[in-house]
Image (cartoon, rainbow, N blue to C red; front, side):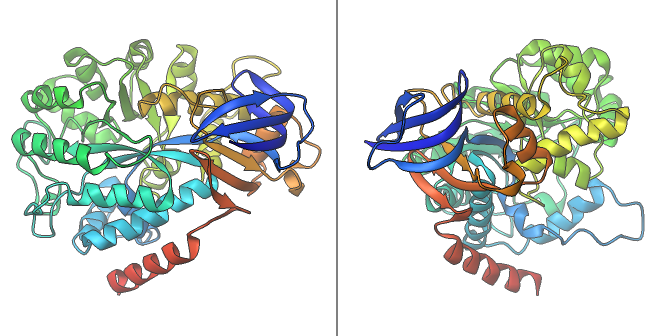
Length: 451
Protein backbone atom coordinates (compact mmCIF):
# COMPACT_ATOMS: atom_id res chain seq x y z
CA UNK A 1 0.00 0.00 0.00
CA UNK A 2 1.34 3.42 -1.04
CA UNK A 3 -0.20 6.76 -0.08
CA UNK A 4 -0.09 10.05 -1.96
CA UNK A 5 -1.13 13.32 -0.32
CA UNK A 6 -2.37 16.30 -2.34
CA UNK A 7 -3.13 19.90 -1.43
CA UNK A 8 -6.28 19.53 -3.54
CA UNK A 9 -7.75 16.90 -5.83
CA UNK A 10 -10.51 16.65 -8.41
CA UNK A 11 -12.32 13.55 -7.16
CA UNK A 12 -15.25 11.89 -8.89
CA UNK A 13 -17.61 13.77 -6.56
CA UNK A 14 -15.84 17.13 -6.95
CA UNK A 15 -12.91 19.10 -5.62
CA UNK A 16 -11.54 18.42 -2.14
CA UNK A 17 -8.62 19.76 -0.11
CA UNK A 18 -5.95 17.90 1.82
CA UNK A 19 -6.58 14.54 0.17
CA UNK A 20 -4.78 11.26 0.83
CA UNK A 21 -5.10 8.65 -1.90
CA UNK A 22 -3.97 5.15 -0.95
CA UNK A 23 -2.99 2.86 -3.79
CA UNK A 24 -3.44 -0.88 -3.34
CA UNK A 25 -1.57 -2.71 -6.08
CA UNK A 26 -2.66 -0.88 -9.23
CA UNK A 27 -5.95 0.60 -8.01
CA UNK A 28 -7.14 3.35 -5.74
CA UNK A 29 -7.84 1.62 -2.44
CA UNK A 30 -8.95 4.47 -0.19
CA UNK A 31 -9.54 8.21 -0.43
CA UNK A 32 -9.48 10.45 2.65
CA UNK A 33 -10.43 14.14 2.63
CA UNK A 34 -9.39 16.99 4.93
CA UNK A 35 -6.49 15.09 6.45
CA UNK A 36 -2.93 16.13 7.15
CA UNK A 37 -0.12 14.18 5.51
CA UNK A 38 1.08 11.17 7.43
CA UNK A 39 4.73 10.18 7.78
CA UNK A 40 5.78 8.44 4.61
CA UNK A 41 3.15 10.07 2.39
CA UNK A 42 4.50 11.41 -0.90
CA UNK A 43 3.36 15.05 -0.96
CA UNK A 44 2.15 16.74 -4.13
CA UNK A 45 0.21 19.75 -5.32
CA UNK A 46 -2.98 19.17 -7.33
CA UNK A 47 -4.38 15.81 -8.44
CA UNK A 48 -6.60 15.33 -11.46
CA UNK A 49 -7.60 12.11 -13.24
CA UNK A 50 -5.60 11.10 -16.29
CA UNK A 51 -7.39 11.63 -19.60
CA UNK A 52 -8.08 9.06 -22.30
CA UNK A 53 -6.69 9.80 -25.77
CA UNK A 54 -9.36 8.08 -27.84
CA UNK A 55 -7.79 8.32 -31.30
CA UNK A 56 -4.12 7.93 -32.23
CA UNK A 57 -2.15 6.88 -35.27
CA UNK A 58 1.14 6.52 -33.42
CA UNK A 59 3.39 6.13 -36.48
CA UNK A 60 2.32 9.55 -37.77
CA UNK A 61 4.27 11.20 -34.91
CA UNK A 62 7.30 10.68 -37.12
CA UNK A 63 5.68 12.81 -39.85
CA UNK A 64 5.32 15.90 -37.68
CA UNK A 65 6.60 18.87 -39.68
CA UNK A 66 7.07 16.92 -42.92
CA UNK A 67 3.84 17.98 -44.64
CA UNK A 68 3.97 21.74 -44.13
CA UNK A 69 5.35 22.69 -47.56
CA UNK A 70 2.82 23.97 -50.07
CA UNK A 71 2.34 21.81 -53.13
CA UNK A 72 1.65 22.86 -56.74
CA UNK A 73 -2.13 22.64 -56.27
CA UNK A 74 -4.60 23.31 -53.45
CA UNK A 75 -3.36 21.46 -50.39
CA UNK A 76 -5.86 19.41 -48.41
CA UNK A 77 -6.26 16.20 -46.45
CA UNK A 78 -5.87 14.31 -49.71
CA UNK A 79 -2.47 15.82 -50.55
CA UNK A 80 -1.37 15.27 -46.94
CA UNK A 81 -2.37 11.63 -47.35
CA UNK A 82 0.05 11.26 -50.25
CA UNK A 83 2.89 12.37 -47.95
CA UNK A 84 1.75 9.82 -45.38
CA UNK A 85 1.80 7.02 -47.94
CA UNK A 86 5.40 7.85 -48.85
CA UNK A 87 6.39 7.98 -45.18
CA UNK A 88 5.02 4.54 -44.29
CA UNK A 89 6.89 2.99 -47.22
CA UNK A 90 10.06 3.38 -45.13
CA UNK A 91 8.93 2.04 -41.74
CA UNK A 92 10.23 -1.28 -40.38
CA UNK A 93 8.69 -2.96 -37.31
CA UNK A 94 11.51 -1.54 -35.17
CA UNK A 95 10.73 1.91 -36.54
CA UNK A 96 7.01 1.58 -35.78
CA UNK A 97 7.80 0.68 -32.18
CA UNK A 98 10.33 3.47 -31.71
CA UNK A 99 7.98 6.14 -33.06
CA UNK A 100 5.07 4.80 -31.00
CA UNK A 101 7.19 4.88 -27.86
CA UNK A 102 7.94 8.56 -28.35
CA UNK A 103 4.28 9.37 -29.02
CA UNK A 104 3.09 7.47 -25.96
CA UNK A 105 5.77 9.02 -23.76
CA UNK A 106 4.64 12.49 -24.84
CA UNK A 107 1.01 11.61 -24.18
CA UNK A 108 1.85 10.64 -20.63
CA UNK A 109 3.88 13.79 -20.09
CA UNK A 110 0.88 15.95 -21.03
CA UNK A 111 -1.77 14.15 -18.97
CA UNK A 112 -3.05 11.24 -21.06
CA UNK A 113 -2.90 7.89 -19.25
CA UNK A 114 -4.71 5.67 -21.81
CA UNK A 115 -4.58 5.64 -25.60
CA UNK A 116 -6.89 4.20 -28.22
CA UNK A 117 -4.57 3.12 -31.03
CA UNK A 118 -6.46 3.13 -34.34
CA UNK A 119 -3.91 0.77 -35.85
CA UNK A 120 -4.03 0.28 -39.59
CA UNK A 121 -0.47 -0.40 -40.79
CA UNK A 122 -0.42 -4.20 -40.64
CA UNK A 123 1.85 -5.61 -43.35
CA UNK A 124 5.38 -5.43 -44.69
CA UNK A 125 6.56 -2.69 -47.03
CA UNK A 126 5.64 -4.74 -50.10
CA UNK A 127 2.15 -5.45 -48.75
CA UNK A 128 2.75 -9.06 -47.77
CA UNK A 129 1.70 -10.13 -44.27
CA UNK A 130 4.43 -10.75 -41.75
CA UNK A 131 4.86 -14.33 -40.50
CA UNK A 132 3.02 -13.06 -37.44
CA UNK A 133 0.10 -11.25 -39.05
CA UNK A 134 -0.14 -9.03 -35.96
CA UNK A 135 3.58 -8.20 -35.89
CA UNK A 136 3.00 -4.46 -35.96
CA UNK A 137 0.18 -4.68 -33.44
CA UNK A 138 2.61 -6.50 -31.18
CA UNK A 139 5.03 -3.59 -31.64
CA UNK A 140 2.28 -1.20 -30.51
CA UNK A 141 1.79 -3.41 -27.45
CA UNK A 142 5.55 -3.32 -26.80
CA UNK A 143 5.51 0.49 -26.97
CA UNK A 144 2.68 0.54 -24.46
CA UNK A 145 4.68 -1.75 -22.17
CA UNK A 146 7.85 0.33 -22.49
CA UNK A 147 6.15 3.64 -21.74
CA UNK A 148 3.50 2.37 -19.31
CA UNK A 149 0.49 3.96 -20.99
CA UNK A 150 -2.70 1.89 -20.90
CA UNK A 151 -3.73 0.58 -24.31
CA UNK A 152 -7.00 0.04 -26.10
CA UNK A 153 -5.89 -1.57 -29.35
CA UNK A 154 -8.21 -0.98 -32.31
CA UNK A 155 -7.10 -3.08 -35.30
CA UNK A 156 -8.36 -1.48 -38.49
CA UNK A 157 -10.17 -3.20 -41.33
CA UNK A 158 -9.26 -1.58 -44.65
CA UNK A 159 -10.02 -3.09 -48.05
CA UNK A 160 -10.90 -0.39 -50.60
CA UNK A 161 -9.93 3.06 -51.81
CA UNK A 162 -13.43 4.54 -52.03
CA UNK A 163 -17.13 3.89 -51.70
CA UNK A 164 -18.63 0.98 -53.58
CA UNK A 165 -15.65 -1.32 -53.18
CA UNK A 166 -13.23 0.59 -55.41
CA UNK A 167 -9.86 -1.17 -55.73
CA UNK A 168 -7.16 0.01 -53.32
CA UNK A 169 -4.31 2.20 -54.54
CA UNK A 170 -0.64 1.18 -54.17
CA UNK A 171 -0.05 3.44 -51.17
CA UNK A 172 -2.63 1.43 -49.20
CA UNK A 173 -1.00 -1.97 -49.65
CA UNK A 174 0.23 -2.19 -46.03
CA UNK A 175 -3.32 -1.73 -44.69
CA UNK A 176 -5.29 -4.35 -46.60
CA UNK A 177 -7.23 -7.40 -45.40
CA UNK A 178 -10.30 -9.33 -46.38
CA UNK A 179 -12.73 -10.47 -43.66
CA UNK A 180 -11.02 -13.85 -43.33
CA UNK A 181 -7.48 -12.53 -42.86
CA UNK A 182 -8.81 -9.79 -40.61
CA UNK A 183 -10.41 -12.36 -38.32
CA UNK A 184 -6.99 -13.99 -37.97
CA UNK A 185 -5.44 -10.57 -37.32
CA UNK A 186 -7.98 -9.90 -34.55
CA UNK A 187 -7.30 -13.23 -32.85
CA UNK A 188 -3.55 -12.75 -32.99
CA UNK A 189 -3.81 -9.16 -31.77
CA UNK A 190 -5.68 -10.30 -28.66
CA UNK A 191 -2.73 -12.55 -27.85
CA UNK A 192 -0.34 -9.64 -28.41
CA UNK A 193 -1.94 -7.53 -25.67
CA UNK A 194 -2.68 -10.37 -23.25
CA UNK A 195 0.27 -9.65 -20.97
CA UNK A 196 -0.37 -5.89 -20.69
CA UNK A 197 -1.89 -4.46 -17.53
CA UNK A 198 -5.49 -3.23 -18.02
CA UNK A 199 -5.30 -3.40 -21.82
CA UNK A 200 -8.35 -4.14 -23.92
CA UNK A 201 -9.29 -4.35 -27.57
CA UNK A 202 -11.96 -3.22 -29.95
CA UNK A 203 -12.35 -3.00 -33.71
CA UNK A 204 -12.07 -0.21 -36.25
CA UNK A 205 -13.62 -0.39 -39.71
CA UNK A 206 -11.48 2.40 -41.15
CA UNK A 207 -14.27 4.29 -42.89
CA UNK A 208 -17.30 3.71 -45.08
CA UNK A 209 -15.11 4.35 -48.10
CA UNK A 210 -12.67 1.57 -47.09
CA UNK A 211 -15.24 -1.18 -46.46
CA UNK A 212 -18.34 -2.39 -48.22
CA UNK A 213 -21.66 -2.86 -46.40
CA UNK A 214 -21.24 -6.63 -46.66
CA UNK A 215 -17.74 -6.50 -45.18
CA UNK A 216 -18.90 -4.19 -42.40
CA UNK A 217 -21.60 -6.65 -41.44
CA UNK A 218 -19.12 -9.53 -41.49
CA UNK A 219 -16.45 -7.94 -39.29
CA UNK A 220 -18.51 -6.19 -36.61
CA UNK A 221 -19.09 -9.39 -34.57
CA UNK A 222 -15.30 -9.62 -34.17
CA UNK A 223 -15.50 -6.71 -31.74
CA UNK A 224 -17.22 -9.03 -29.28
CA UNK A 225 -18.14 -6.64 -26.46
CA UNK A 226 -15.36 -4.16 -27.23
CA UNK A 227 -15.55 -0.64 -28.65
CA UNK A 228 -16.16 0.07 -32.33
CA UNK A 229 -14.45 3.09 -33.92
CA UNK A 230 -14.81 4.48 -37.43
CA UNK A 231 -13.64 7.58 -39.31
CA UNK A 232 -16.63 9.38 -40.74
CA UNK A 233 -17.61 12.65 -42.46
CA UNK A 234 -14.17 14.18 -41.95
CA UNK A 235 -14.00 15.82 -45.37
CA UNK A 236 -16.55 17.44 -47.72
CA UNK A 237 -15.29 15.25 -50.58
CA UNK A 238 -16.02 12.19 -48.46
CA UNK A 239 -19.59 13.39 -47.93
CA UNK A 240 -20.06 14.10 -51.64
CA UNK A 241 -18.64 10.70 -52.63
CA UNK A 242 -20.92 8.93 -50.16
CA UNK A 243 -23.99 10.70 -51.54
CA UNK A 244 -22.96 9.78 -55.09
CA UNK A 245 -22.60 6.14 -54.03
CA UNK A 246 -25.60 5.68 -51.75
CA UNK A 247 -27.81 8.75 -51.95
CA UNK A 248 -27.17 9.38 -48.25
CA UNK A 249 -24.65 11.32 -46.19
CA UNK A 250 -22.09 9.20 -44.27
CA UNK A 251 -23.45 9.67 -40.73
CA UNK A 252 -27.02 9.14 -41.88
CA UNK A 253 -26.05 6.01 -43.81
CA UNK A 254 -24.26 4.54 -40.81
CA UNK A 255 -27.09 5.28 -38.38
CA UNK A 256 -29.57 3.77 -40.83
CA UNK A 257 -27.56 0.62 -41.53
CA UNK A 258 -25.72 -0.28 -38.32
CA UNK A 259 -26.77 -0.63 -34.69
CA UNK A 260 -24.84 2.41 -33.49
CA UNK A 261 -24.94 2.62 -29.69
CA UNK A 262 -22.75 3.48 -26.71
CA UNK A 263 -20.04 1.03 -27.87
CA UNK A 264 -19.38 3.16 -30.92
CA UNK A 265 -17.06 6.11 -31.46
CA UNK A 266 -17.55 8.16 -34.63
CA UNK A 267 -14.22 9.88 -35.23
CA UNK A 268 -14.39 13.45 -36.58
CA UNK A 269 -18.05 13.50 -37.79
CA UNK A 270 -17.19 17.04 -38.82
CA UNK A 271 -19.71 17.53 -41.61
CA UNK A 272 -23.21 16.74 -40.33
CA UNK A 273 -26.63 18.24 -40.86
CA UNK A 274 -28.68 19.36 -37.85
CA UNK A 275 -30.69 16.14 -38.11
CA UNK A 276 -27.53 13.98 -38.17
CA UNK A 277 -26.14 15.87 -35.20
CA UNK A 278 -29.28 15.21 -33.14
CA UNK A 279 -29.40 11.56 -34.19
CA UNK A 280 -25.77 10.97 -33.27
CA UNK A 281 -26.40 12.47 -29.82
CA UNK A 282 -29.45 10.25 -29.31
CA UNK A 283 -27.46 7.13 -30.21
CA UNK A 284 -25.26 7.59 -27.07
CA UNK A 285 -22.18 6.99 -29.23
CA UNK A 286 -19.13 9.18 -28.64
CA UNK A 287 -17.98 11.80 -31.11
CA UNK A 288 -14.20 11.39 -31.29
CA UNK A 289 -12.85 14.89 -31.82
CA UNK A 290 -9.23 15.63 -32.73
CA UNK A 291 -9.08 19.43 -32.83
CA UNK A 292 -5.35 19.88 -33.48
CA UNK A 293 -5.30 17.43 -36.40
CA UNK A 294 -8.61 18.71 -37.77
CA UNK A 295 -7.14 22.22 -37.78
CA UNK A 296 -3.85 21.03 -39.28
CA UNK A 297 -5.62 19.21 -42.10
CA UNK A 298 -8.20 21.93 -42.71
CA UNK A 299 -11.05 19.52 -42.08
CA UNK A 300 -13.61 21.95 -40.71
CA UNK A 301 -15.32 22.58 -37.37
CA UNK A 302 -17.55 20.09 -35.56
CA UNK A 303 -21.09 21.39 -34.72
CA UNK A 304 -20.32 21.30 -31.00
CA UNK A 305 -22.92 23.68 -29.50
CA UNK A 306 -25.86 21.90 -31.16
CA UNK A 307 -24.38 18.52 -30.28
CA UNK A 308 -23.94 19.41 -26.62
CA UNK A 309 -27.42 20.90 -26.39
CA UNK A 310 -28.71 17.47 -27.48
CA UNK A 311 -26.66 15.82 -24.67
CA UNK A 312 -24.08 14.46 -27.10
CA UNK A 313 -21.02 12.67 -25.74
CA UNK A 314 -17.49 13.52 -26.87
CA UNK A 315 -13.86 12.70 -26.23
CA UNK A 316 -10.56 13.95 -27.62
CA UNK A 317 -7.75 12.30 -29.54
CA UNK A 318 -4.37 13.29 -30.89
CA UNK A 319 -4.93 11.54 -34.27
CA UNK A 320 -1.95 12.45 -36.50
CA UNK A 321 0.16 13.37 -33.44
CA UNK A 322 1.51 16.45 -35.18
CA UNK A 323 1.44 18.02 -31.70
CA UNK A 324 0.73 15.98 -28.59
CA UNK A 325 -0.71 18.01 -25.76
CA UNK A 326 -3.92 17.29 -23.88
CA UNK A 327 -4.59 20.91 -22.94
CA UNK A 328 -4.05 22.07 -26.53
CA UNK A 329 -6.71 19.66 -27.79
CA UNK A 330 -9.23 21.05 -25.31
CA UNK A 331 -8.23 24.67 -25.91
CA UNK A 332 -8.41 24.27 -29.70
CA UNK A 333 -11.83 22.65 -29.38
CA UNK A 334 -13.17 25.74 -27.60
CA UNK A 335 -11.25 28.33 -29.61
CA UNK A 336 -12.43 26.98 -32.97
CA UNK A 337 -16.01 27.50 -31.80
CA UNK A 338 -15.21 31.01 -30.55
CA UNK A 339 -13.79 31.94 -33.95
CA UNK A 340 -16.74 30.46 -35.81
CA UNK A 341 -19.40 31.96 -33.53
CA UNK A 342 -17.56 35.16 -32.58
CA UNK A 343 -18.24 34.63 -28.88
CA UNK A 344 -16.54 33.45 -25.69
CA UNK A 345 -17.12 30.49 -23.37
CA UNK A 346 -19.49 29.02 -25.93
CA UNK A 347 -19.29 25.35 -24.89
CA UNK A 348 -20.85 25.77 -21.45
CA UNK A 349 -24.56 25.79 -20.85
CA UNK A 350 -25.04 27.91 -17.75
CA UNK A 351 -23.88 31.26 -16.42
CA UNK A 352 -21.11 30.86 -13.88
CA UNK A 353 -19.97 27.49 -15.23
CA UNK A 354 -16.26 26.91 -15.86
CA UNK A 355 -15.35 26.22 -19.48
CA UNK A 356 -12.24 24.30 -18.47
CA UNK A 357 -14.20 22.05 -16.12
CA UNK A 358 -16.92 21.41 -18.71
CA UNK A 359 -14.36 20.45 -21.34
CA UNK A 360 -12.38 18.29 -18.96
CA UNK A 361 -15.40 16.45 -17.56
CA UNK A 362 -16.81 15.83 -21.02
CA UNK A 363 -13.54 14.56 -22.46
CA UNK A 364 -12.91 12.39 -19.40
CA UNK A 365 -16.27 10.63 -19.50
CA UNK A 366 -16.54 10.34 -23.26
CA UNK A 367 -12.95 9.25 -23.70
CA UNK A 368 -13.17 6.35 -21.30
CA UNK A 369 -16.55 5.29 -22.67
CA UNK A 370 -15.10 5.24 -26.18
CA UNK A 371 -12.18 3.09 -25.05
CA UNK A 372 -14.33 0.56 -23.24
CA UNK A 373 -13.25 1.42 -19.68
CA UNK A 374 -16.26 1.60 -17.31
CA UNK A 375 -14.44 2.59 -14.10
CA UNK A 376 -12.15 5.62 -14.15
CA UNK A 377 -11.35 8.86 -12.37
CA UNK A 378 -10.30 9.50 -8.80
CA UNK A 379 -12.61 7.15 -6.94
CA UNK A 380 -12.08 4.05 -4.84
CA UNK A 381 -11.69 0.93 -6.96
CA UNK A 382 -10.65 2.77 -10.12
CA UNK A 383 -7.26 2.22 -11.74
CA UNK A 384 -4.68 4.45 -10.07
CA UNK A 385 -4.21 6.72 -13.09
CA UNK A 386 -3.45 10.19 -11.73
CA UNK A 387 -1.86 13.41 -12.90
CA UNK A 388 -0.38 15.95 -10.50
CA UNK A 389 -0.08 19.62 -11.43
CA UNK A 390 2.61 21.79 -9.92
CA UNK A 391 0.78 24.09 -7.50
CA UNK A 392 3.85 26.32 -7.47
CA UNK A 393 3.71 27.06 -11.20
CA UNK A 394 3.20 30.80 -11.81
CA UNK A 395 0.09 30.22 -13.95
CA UNK A 396 -1.55 28.29 -11.11
CA UNK A 397 -0.62 30.72 -8.34
CA UNK A 398 -3.57 31.37 -6.07
CA UNK A 399 -5.92 29.27 -8.22
CA UNK A 400 -8.47 26.96 -6.65
CA UNK A 401 -11.02 24.39 -7.80
CA UNK A 402 -12.25 24.85 -11.38
CA UNK A 403 -10.05 27.90 -11.91
CA UNK A 404 -7.13 25.48 -11.81
CA UNK A 405 -8.45 23.73 -14.91
CA UNK A 406 -9.26 27.03 -16.63
CA UNK A 407 -5.69 28.22 -16.04
CA UNK A 408 -4.10 24.91 -16.99
CA UNK A 409 -6.04 24.68 -20.26
CA UNK A 410 -6.27 28.32 -21.36
CA UNK A 411 -3.22 30.02 -19.81
CA UNK A 412 -0.77 27.62 -21.41
CA UNK A 413 0.61 26.31 -18.16
CA UNK A 414 3.00 23.42 -18.86
CA UNK A 415 2.54 22.44 -15.26
CA UNK A 416 2.23 18.65 -15.26
CA UNK A 417 4.50 17.44 -12.49
CA UNK A 418 3.95 13.70 -12.01
CA UNK A 419 1.87 11.04 -13.75
CA UNK A 420 0.97 7.66 -12.27
CA UNK A 421 -0.40 4.79 -14.35
CA UNK A 422 -1.69 1.80 -12.40
CA UNK A 423 -0.02 3.27 -9.34
CA UNK A 424 3.44 3.50 -10.95
CA UNK A 425 5.04 6.94 -11.23
CA UNK A 426 6.03 7.21 -14.89
CA UNK A 427 6.51 10.98 -15.14
CA UNK A 428 8.32 13.07 -12.56
CA UNK A 429 8.96 16.82 -12.84
CA UNK A 430 7.32 16.66 -16.23
CA UNK A 431 9.68 14.10 -17.71
CA UNK A 432 9.08 10.43 -18.43
CA UNK A 433 11.43 8.08 -16.61
CA UNK A 434 12.60 6.55 -19.92
CA UNK A 435 12.74 9.81 -21.88
CA UNK A 436 16.45 9.65 -22.67
CA UNK A 437 16.51 6.19 -24.25
CA UNK A 438 13.15 6.60 -25.98
CA UNK A 439 14.26 9.91 -27.46
CA UNK A 440 17.57 8.46 -28.60
CA UNK A 441 15.92 5.58 -30.48
CA UNK A 442 13.42 7.92 -32.08
CA UNK A 443 16.09 10.33 -33.30
CA UNK A 444 18.06 7.49 -34.84
CA UNK A 445 14.99 6.30 -36.74
CA UNK A 446 14.04 9.76 -38.00
CA UNK A 447 17.58 10.61 -39.07
CA UNK A 448 17.61 7.54 -41.30
CA UNK A 449 14.07 7.90 -42.67
CA UNK A 450 14.14 11.63 -43.39
CA UNK A 451 17.58 11.51 -44.97
